[in-house]
Length: 120
Image (cartoon, rainbow, N blue to C red; front, side, top):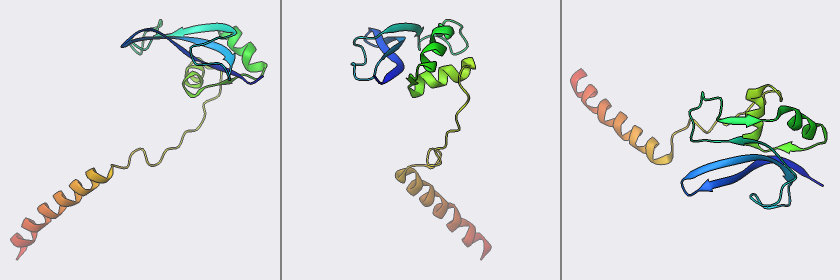
């Protein structure tokens, strides 16, 4: 059985609230799970202690049994010091999109033209 430690969404529309659960990866996101390990409330301030609450002993137990955390849960575990930080590399994240590059090129041409006229 492929185990995952992941988020199960709850709360009403536009007011999300998540449960951190250990579940079979074949089950639906908000469906059946084996154990509730904690909660995550994204509406609270990032420095709030109540934003992420986890039972770290049970999380470590499931990790020892081979459960794989999802990306978001892995970040929570890194912040708690349970899992070693993983190096992330997305070199294209900082590159502007096609339209922004075109605008920057047009702006550079516009500023270069008056500078050339002034030097002549």
